[in-house]
Length: 174
Length: 100
Image (cartoon, rainbow over all chains, first blue to last red; front, side):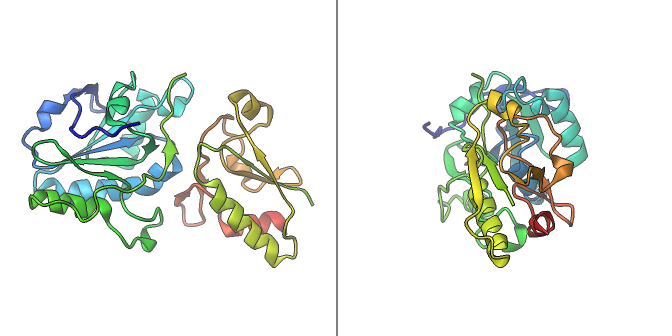
């Protein structure tokens, strides 16, 4: 699947009960989209770090949006109701949206959860891939997502523009 | 002793689990006894009571009995480590206890 070079337009329901559209993040100098879900152990291992980054960069206008596109019929743990519960229990500070049609996952070219897409102010893709280089936080040596955000805020190219995302496969509808 | 590792190719964690299992087995002089079984379909997952990948059974008993009861399916399995963190593979301690 080809990864989208520009952020795809979307209008998706969020766990906060509102519909969220790409345009509402227009003022953000950097937009981070994260293909995610509720039940994947790799998401569970990384979500705390994703949330910490979202909180850390909020003051600088960076917005994080997680999108769950998994087939909730085959995987009930990824239903919208379960998303609402999971976001509350995990204390997400970022928007968590439901892509029931899987249209946005396909537009992004997503394959895994979690999988990060970093867009600059013009919503051009500047980084795609893993959050960092280890699911075990104490073993992390490369902070891909953080470095990409810093570079994008500085108007520079990130030191690493692409890494293989590590995680569960997106659960496509058959 | 029968040691099975059931896995689904769609989850990337089984090579790590296999390596850890083989390491623990080698320490006990049981190297080379792992039966690998790939689960290919949802129907197969149901028939095998496969709660996710990877699943390791020693003489038919799951190394993480608490996590074995989730509905079967082709998914990545979540293990809870001793410190409460989620993990896609069982801990060394879980394997050691299952083999003791």
